[in-house]
Length: 208
Image (cartoon, rainbow, N blue to C red; front, side, top):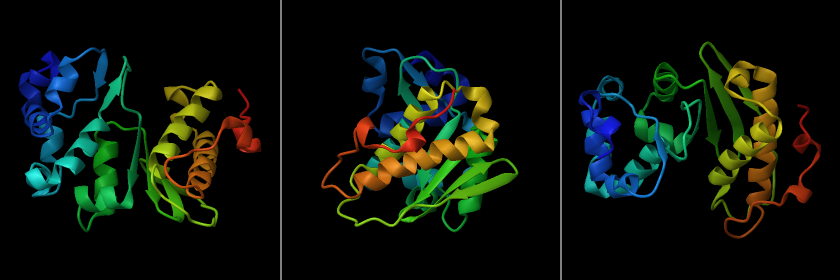
């Protein structure tokens, strides 16, 4: 078990990593950055959520939730979290707003909530905005969420932006709009086939 995760205030995380069979991965070649939720953070989840996640039949969802908190390489903090409506319904049944609030209270700067073909909701503490999703001829949704998340990060990096700009609503909105474009194109193709850079429009020429 990584030293930080094995520390006294991360016992619940250690238990979850073991249930998800991720301990061996974290002991492998790294480095890895673990955005480690404390025991106190887990206690803020709605009653029964953690027990449900730890059930063997929910292992795939547990892995998905935990890998939001693990990245290859060294990163200073978890600043952006992308969640789907299904994720929120599982993590905080009947209280999506509470699920988002819990992420923001845990130190996340911005939460990107995707909802299939409906608008993407961008959440900061005390402020929410929406970005429209275009209507496309749907072929396959496999990989659309990953395409969205990867595109947001790619646009942000291409624009030369950092953590400090995540509270800039206009810039985050532009990044989400660019990510929506990538995810929408991905949904018009069979399998996980996001577009190449040359296929993308003007949104992919951000000003530095």
